[in-house]
Image (cartoon, rainbow, N blue to C red; front, side, top):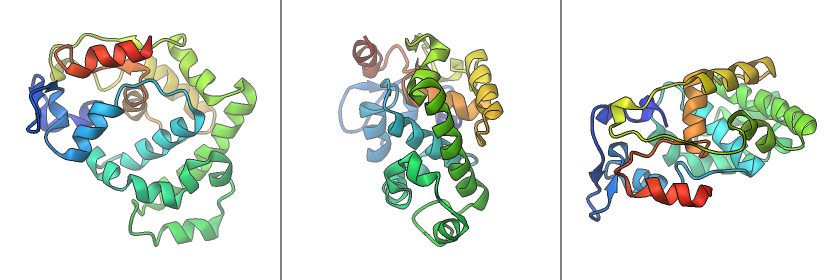
Length: 211
């Protein structure tokens, strides 16, 4: 959830959502889907491999689009991609890709769909090498979330040396649609980085859950 998801409020501080008085990161806005995602998921450490794979696929699908577009299609993606089971996705063939290209519930981009299958195969290879993808990915932050302390959205970087390193390694392992900006958004989403603003009510909550 790097700058691409905060572009509409790039210089904003946290603000209360319309439904209550709690202070949130400005990018959450007032859309119930976005607010729910911000309040329940974004920044919470994820160590389950299947959920990590889900976020990788969705982040790749998001490239060039808004994140809210992907969130609205999330259920359709789960149905289309066998609930993001990497072993099943890794077996998708040309016929399955052709079927996905006809699915109006997802982003029908051949390169992104083929990337999801390619990434599933690379994902399984990482699991085989490290025991789990979680162990591999979280190793880049020594198994502990990076806790930042940003007062405003405009201070949050779109990428960091850590996301550069993870992105480079993923590419070397055969992953695609894993540029550093996409990877940093992934790191934020799965809690490798706590980039909630310090004034956001979730900042401390996410920190407590991480501990």
